[in-house]
Image (cartoon, rainbow, N blue to C red):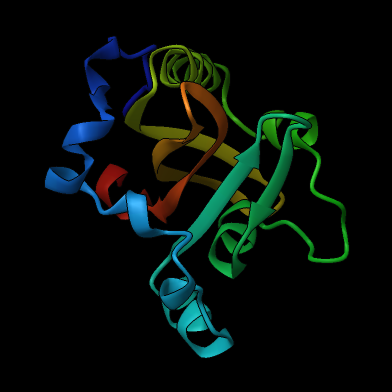
Length: 151
């Protein structure tokens, strides 16, 4: 397997560019809120939406992210518990980019290797900060299963 090294911070991108790369600015728009069938269709493709409220570190996941992590729906989402599933090299890269995104109000993309009860897999995390004025109040984005790219 290809090792995940802590990535250089060139995997981040400024918010004003996000429309050129990923349309994350509209993920929380009312017309894009996923209905059950749309959520299921994305999950079937290995894609899910996620968000993290930075005031309390509360996670929100769509079905696709639950599936990626092999996380039971009846189990509470606990960020510390989720972080334990990341391989150490990936966790280091994800945490560095997350901190950079919050500090500099930038989006990011990173591939991460995780261990789940069902085995191990690779996912691509695309995230962007949600800002209130100059303050970042949350991160949100997509997580996609990219395990096939690493086989």
